[in-house]
Image (cartoon, rainbow, N blue to C red; front, side, top):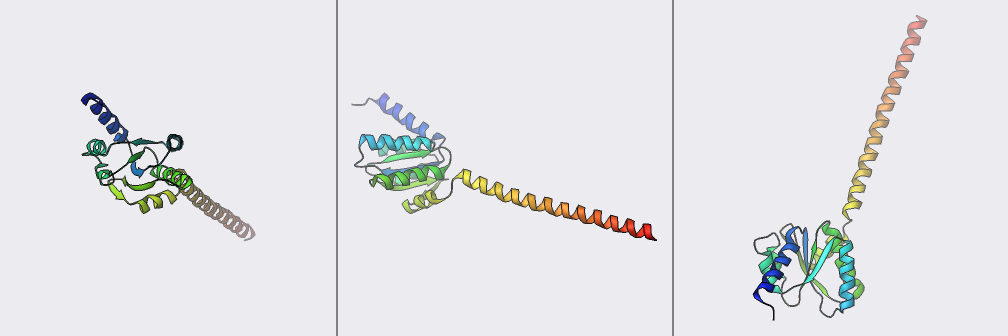
Length: 174
């Protein structure tokens, strides 16, 4: 039986887990084997996320007065909480893909920027391109725009040079 100090330590650990999180996804992983949960955790580490099966009362206490306070609406029954620390899209993508692969468990919902997301919203978030892909698209657009501007300036300079040459020829003939 856990002592009061054990419970306080566990609560502190859960609070620290949420401290730097960008997104928190609540799932039901009932029926998973130890091996499947271990594989799931490894996949989440690659996405800079962590998974913890927690008691619902501890989730409520740990997230009280934080941006994740609304997660208690999903903390019913067996709950595993995934906290993403970098890109919320990659965390959601990892969860959705693994649940599809194993064909067990379900997404209960998520909290992102103090907003409550439904399971459908989490799946939609998982379909978005990653942060790296979006940044490369933006940079590609900026690069092509810069190339266009350089082309315009080069054509203006070329036109001025041709015009100057024509004026010099006319003045030389007169």
